[in-house]
Image 1 (spheres, helix red, strand yellow):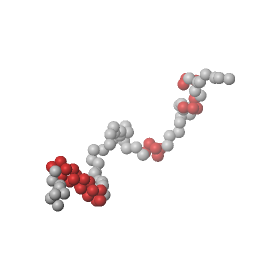
Image 2 (cartoon, rainbow, N blue to C red):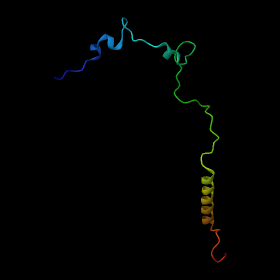
Image 3 (cartoon, rainbow, N blue to C red):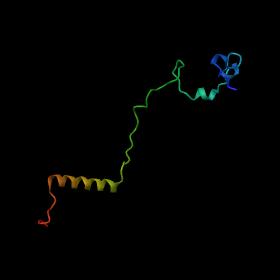
Image 4 (cartoon, rainbow, N blue to C red):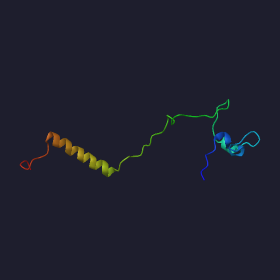
Length: 88
């Protein structure tokens, strides 16, 4: 048989804590957050701005060489500097 769900005011008091039976809190969890001098937790809306960039290459040397050849061919094609069969 179907029963209507409980409304928040009908929850048993032990389910969400009250003055007589508060929800236990771990001291280690609270200590893991940095706080301001007057108490509130420090919260930042975005990542830090002083992120160090990596100096490692993004692509392999062989890929960069291939890409340079492709660009050279494209430029030569646009300017038409490639030797024709008659010039060879």
